[in-house]
Image (tube, rainbow, N blue to C red; front, side, top):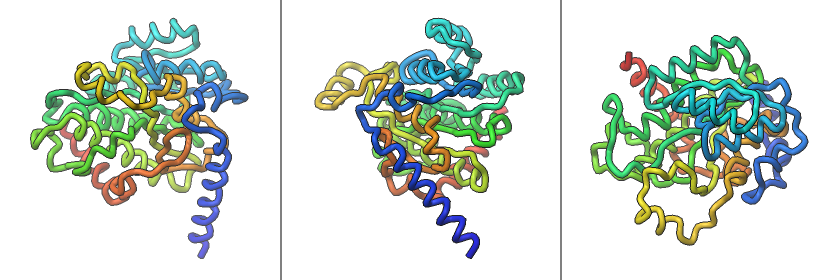
Amino acid sequence: MAGNTRFVRTRERMTMGIDAIASFNAESTAEEVTEGLDLTGKRYLITGCNSGLGYETARVLALRGAFIVGAARTEEKAKRALEELGIEGRPVACELSDLTSVRACVQAVKSDAQPLDGIIANAGIMALPENKQKHGIELQFFTNHVGHFVLVTGLLDLLADDGRVVILSSGAHFSAERGLELDNLSGEHEYHSWRMYGRSKLANILFARGLAKRFEGTNRTANSLHPGVIQTNLTRHMSEDVLGPMMKGLKLKSVGQGAATQCLVATHPGLSDVSGCYFSDCQVADTLKEGKDDNLAEELWKRTEEIVASIA
């Protein structure tokens, strides 16, 4: 009975938290969802801080007083971004497709011995036209999921007692009509750029869900989200012949609107008890049925650990 009571109370707190953000929507900007917050003394790590949504997220959280640990493919790119923004921060290199770089990033951040109030896994690659691999794993899955898995799990010792992990997924996870395809991690079986991208984004959702499960009984949270459709550097691998028709008829968000959901999930006081959810347009949203499969999340976790352990 006590266990059921705790569950009900947690569910009630989550409902109250979700009610607290009811006024936000697809039109809300990152500045609007963080208005009035004082993040002074808080520290957030953001991957992909040098462009697009990561750049805007770093700007807005710093505007609210946060210290930014900005990660980019090279330390030079991260440093330049922080300097351009004129914010206090710590630049670090983190090439997500290179686990040596990811592990070095983990050690660099740990050497600061400062707790992280949030980790925002923002960076990624999208819709590679041809099947590329790293260590025999399709590159989008490796970069978007495995790289962030190593980074986030490596930094959990630094995550504050009420710290939040925010994993950027995408509505494109609905393109993963064959699910995770754990028997096709190489991507060689009928490679399709969007299906493979969708698969990596489904993995992001399940990783956040697996983290949330491990955070139960603590004040830490983990959530995933779809930022919306924004034309950023993420589309750099796509030709105009492909990108043009795809964007036609879609209502694009501004970068400020695109960064809103991740800033909201990372900072809003009302979401301190909300974990294991998927957000879109600043609200909780639905996923593929596979995105709610806790057994699949555990299978992915174990398979990812095996991949990581096999790479020296």
